[in-house]
Amino acid sequence: MTPVFSNTRLLIAGFVLPLAAVGTALVTQHVFEMQPCPWCVLQRLIFVAISLSALLGLAGQMLRVVIVRRIGAALMGLLALCGITAALWQHFVAAVSVSCKLTLADRIVGGIGVDALLPQVFAAYASCADAAAKLLGVPYEFYSLTLFVVLAALAAVLLLRRRG
Image 1: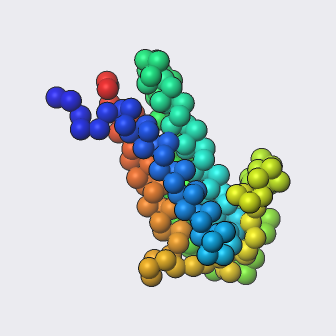
Image 2: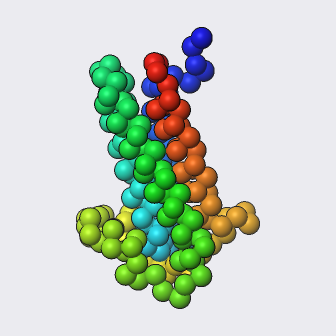
């Protein structure tokens, strides 16, 4: 029996959905002036890394190199788990802190240097408490949490499949 969603389609979704999330975050930042905190920026970085991992998996799928597809899916899954952790930390710890300077999120983003390379995307401009916002009554970070859970599930499906 052929699955409804092929590995190729799942990998394309794993590439497009995180980039759409970053695009949405950029719209809320630059159009609606919702400035990101370090944990928001870290989640953006994780979304981009998931997209790149999906692209690696997609290359493996197209070249019919199963191990490359599986490595891409495994990286997607691990990164999605990191994203889940970051979103939960943002909500339960960072959002109620007075300052989130020099946190793990700040160190990761600053250590990689993407905040200096692309500040309009990866620079934090607000404290975690100031950046705490709701969209339709739901904390903003729960939207990224939901997408990270979906991406983790997608990666699990890709890893558990024997063919496709």
